[in-house]
Length: 395
Image (cartoon, rainbow, N blue to C red; front, side):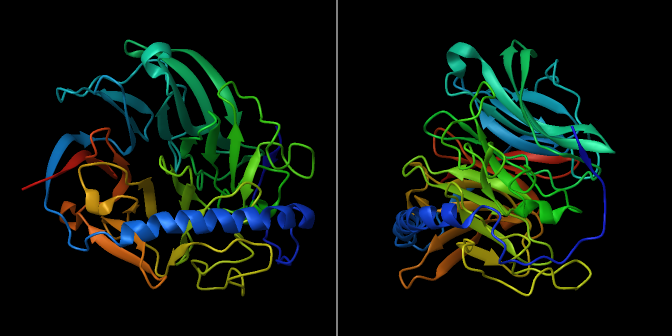
């Protein structure tokens, strides 16, 4: 597999639409329809009571080593990952299990490590899970996804489903978020590799993309580039470092958020084949203070639903659907690493996006946010030590 090495960035013409003008024209109307439907859902959430409900914070686990993600099992247990490479069970009785054996080696360097864990919908009978992680070496690495069976406290039948390509020599910007669509296919976010941001506009590679594949690793025939013009796994393109991915269980809408550089964090509503612009269009600037691009929009590139300047360092994303907090039904909940809180995002009646800061009393960087089967909210804090907390309604 070829490996990307660092090189000087070239100026590029943002008008060059690598996805193909004909494909973009064919998808434009569908994308607009999806955006209207999704915003109607958020508008309904915004019309709910504005007062923050009372709630209780409970620590479920603490002294964790760079926890990254949490997922729920049918028996009431939870799985969580530690970026250092450990997968553990948080039992319903509060016990934290020993690291699960058989997890593939991960590259714990820079922003790399073990990322998402996603149980299969049929976990109760097949015990299968999906893991994303940084694979390889410092000089040749990529985001990888495997499936495996969780037998007792060991992974067996580990199968590689997808590896981003080409390999790169930077331990940053992996993406690594997983979600399953209603048709049973998997979505994975991949980052641009930091030093290779132009590759997010190259449909032939899988850096800076969301990719779609089946649970056996095969590629669907209805992916946007299945018949040519790009890599057959690519589902959307033009992403920087997406660390939030959520499917609305009510509408099926797929939301993604991604880190900007200095400013320009975005929430996007995904539609197959769409180009979300990075780095040709952005609301952020480079860390040096230089412009990444003079453009914040360009024909054929899909604008964000919402963006932040300055950045909040968005991490973790879920659409709230549950009975515990009815006033928040349909809201997007976004973790904020820099601001050390959760943002509740809705669309107000006048069309403007509304935000509410939640749970700032936690006082830690928020790495992940999920909705438990009972409607409670579970958040994961970043770093070492990190925590897993449950937020339930009531005093």
